[in-house]
Length: 426
Image (cartoon, rainbow, N blue to C red):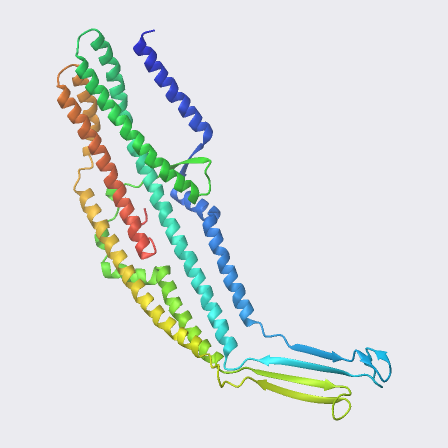
């Protein structure tokens, strides 16, 4: 066996062995976006952990509805020195006192606490759905990113296969003295350059796949996105008016709803703190067997703190400042939402305009020309410089076309994310 043939055999064997090891390490699963979403919502641990907070907040509403327990106090005689009896509570000579008290909350504090807890539930739900919105956007972005990276990697296969064949042929021709070493090295350099770029894309795909596996809670599977989306044929974004999209974001953005409910929460807390300044009433009844002005004495009692010093001044002031703070935060969040929608809308229009300017048949024409160029180069009909220039142009065209399609899909997903709901279903 010739040395060149042996080297090619070793390389092919090593690649095959690596592929087998990879397939054993991870299963490959072709998955559609709807199936990925189902798996995501059912298994994502971050989402499940956040959902528990809703149940916690609802339990706090239940607790806010509960009335205070009555207080029972019993005082009994330990030792009667006259009768020489321990724990003498008899009717004839014993003594004991029973006292029952109930706290009566005034100024509507209980209802205010219930409303505060209910608003707390809404805020937790807003956080949950905003997290869901964010993670779903990440899932969609990674899904399409992985799909386009796999297409880009596959696009390298044809030129690499052609160059591998050409390199083998050139090695034999160079050994026979038909061509120079310079030409062989130049072709090999082009081949190695394409292989290096393909490896870089594979590394990018590995990073996206890792995040995709985390979202779907399955690191044993290599996901292959299945999508028939053609970026160039999607509906135009120009049919949507920017003010309408911003109004839609006001309605659908859960982070904006959270800011609004935070303001409501601050206002309710301010009302509660003012109510807390009103003292609560303690009502009670007491029975004294033998220790009062008459035997079997009964009493009724009322108790209330006198608000001379502590009128909850500090907490009221802090709650008032919190209302102003929440108003400022809400205004800032509204401005942030407007800016995000405007930015996403502009990006979507730009990518749409750029993609529409490219002839969709351009890519197919390039693929057909690639084979012809390679054959003509082998026949020495074109120069090495023309050959390498074409391969470089081919590579740039494939990458740019793939990137433009991905950018348009990502821009639409970003616009959907900024609005809070999909306006364009991919």
